[in-house]
Length: 258
Length: 250
Image (cartoon, rainbow over all chains, first blue to last red; front, side):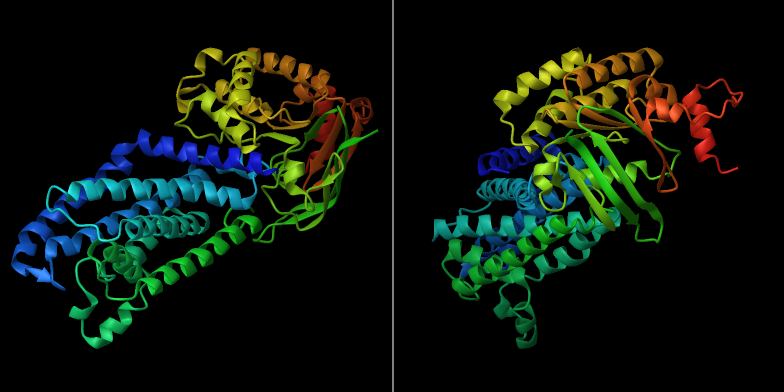
């Protein structure tokens, strides 16, 4: 398929996904905003006032990047996982793309791009909501945007792996509930790694979400628990692995073809 | 004469061990209206799945207009239009969007796809439903929408897997007329159906598949000539009698 036609196919998948995001905005955009308001109110304002500061930063400002990232991760992941799974398992309209000449890499790009759009959109909305509770300074705007994009990309890719491979409805709820949520909460959304005992500090280093939250937080505060380069490399590595897995799954038809 | 489809010794064994196809070979010349008949579970949909890339074959080869589906899958797929057995469009989308999106997957720009989709919806009697949510359409409308979707990229080879299942007589006849015009335009059609009078009326060539094997293959006249002269007594046509002779397990 020539490149210009591949782009049309990519745009078609993306456009369909974005229209869906806006069509069911009360399911795709609103829940994270409501949850964030509660998080900001409880952890930021009520508990944050008692905690004071962390790493020399008021707790409310410390927690804002983590909570934005929490929304970005869950939304980009769920957008792709649920959309793909629904198309594969319920309406079976994934066949529309599979019988077409659209190459696997373009299918991956189209679905993942809509996950990125939702992730970044929700991230921006949560950031706007945070302004009602605190005025976070942005030390490195480019780093903030980079991590917003990379995080959405990595977790949209993760969501696609989940959506392709899930064999039943449990398959797309198990990963977010029992894998993603613990990793996010233990990845430093609410605390600094330095407040943990040495053993748990080392355990945290094995959590990829830890690097992502810290890189994003560096963009706001200018300080981080790990180096920025390490965070970027971990995200890029993860992205390449997940991209490879997705293209392999689609080429082989694993979880899709009989 | 160029062949639209050549299937050579195709076998399919599913993961559970079921042997759905046991070495099927089939040739459909370009421009033919070809009926593939068989009882439920005979292997028709599996064979269509293999041709369209939705099912992986265990052995054998398939080529569409001379293009091997394993060597150049994307090129082969661009020539095929599929109207599957199951209703499988996004139920929350409007017919016009469903058809236009399908064009997009084939690399057709919206500026070309939108007028083409509108024309197809008019041809298939869905013009006044183009802005209605898909799941609200009647069964017959959904079937026609599936045909419009299969035709949007102007395929040379159209596969219709039970397109008239659950469709009333009047609508079925109008669909027959429409399919006949398509063959006149040079589109090769592979049709599977359980309505044997439909196949008898439309198809020039017929293959009957049973338990994963082709048990008869030839022109409609050749197949009807297999009739042994005894009517089944159920009032069906000659093709139905032949079909029962060839596929009956009793």
